[in-house]
Image (cartoon, rainbow, N blue to C red; front, side, top):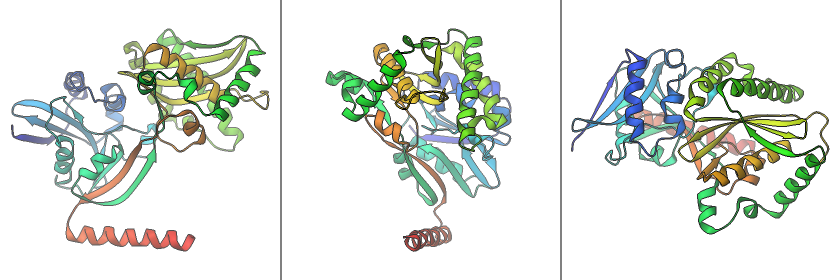
Length: 356
């Protein structure tokens, strides 16, 4: 059938949420960051000038995307305000029904670029294949590794997660576990209610802030919007089983907290806070906490434990695969824009060459 794409304003986020949830239910490839739990959280504040894209195959809705217009740019699932976008969307892209025609997502974004007043499209955390499918001139692109543990693949190969680790990583983890075990039984617990999850979130934020403060840095939650956003997200998504607050203890002592998202067999390790004061030289609170969380996910039959984007060494040590996500700023491919983009690319290459 003919694909028809419409763009319009959002008059009621509640009504959009109902439509979104209905499509989400029939969208098996939907990520947590494409769900209404994430997109709808404080939506009226994040999307001050919203544009919704709808794709229809015949009379059936097969695609949705929410953008915010700011300074001539459309930002997919983001505001364009660095303060609000500190929540950091990943695994981003238009929401597609299972039977959406091939290329629907690229067609929707191409339509967005043709809207009056749109000079640029900003796409954060999208699949590289989607970036490659767009007929655009790219002004900026950054590809970031997104390490993860492919638990389903390990299970199919008859290999446990711990067996998949390198000898050096296993050695560090076992030494850390022995050190913590000397303080008492090492335990992973999951918050059992929204109230407990919010309490543990506050404790995690305190540890996170103290850790970054010792390095002379503010930490993620120094931004008040981050704090408000995640309290609202936990309040809404915890009862749906989409948020995990995990606490690791060694006897009476706290090792740390993990704040993860749970979505259709995926566990996204989003944020954390660890107790680093007074620990021994071989203690690895982060590695130890993630090991316990990964093995719990493994026992529950989860498919993927995702560390999200970033090239931190600990992620590559614990991960079994590292696909990439792309951050792209692009415009419609006109001759003048090709010339500007080419000039920028040459300038960047010369800058790197001079630094070398």
